[in-house]
Amino acid sequence: MNALFLLCGTVFGFLLSRARVTDYDTMLAFFRFRDLHIGGVMGVAIAVAAVGLAFLKKSASKAAIGCPIEVGTKPMTPGLFAAGLVFGVGWALTGA
Image (cartoon, rainbow, N blue to C red; front, side, top):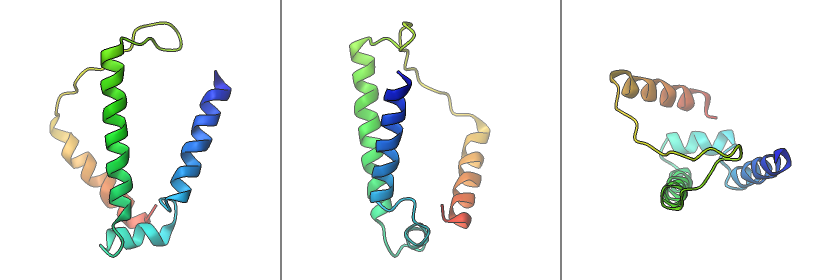
């Protein structure tokens, strides 16, 4: 099972590098609104995650250890927006 996770992580990292998401200059151009393809990459990632979560909800799948996978909603908390803002500012400042 660990080999499968390693393979998935390797493929995921390779795809991110091919999309230039790991490149400093690309991230800088994104935050300066000069190259917006990173937004497209994020949009595709969100769409794929939404489809995957919908599939998990409908299929009643089980986790690798045998317990059922439960996908529930998360409540909005007061600090969530501030935490997202701090994350985004840090991401923009480091460019990575």
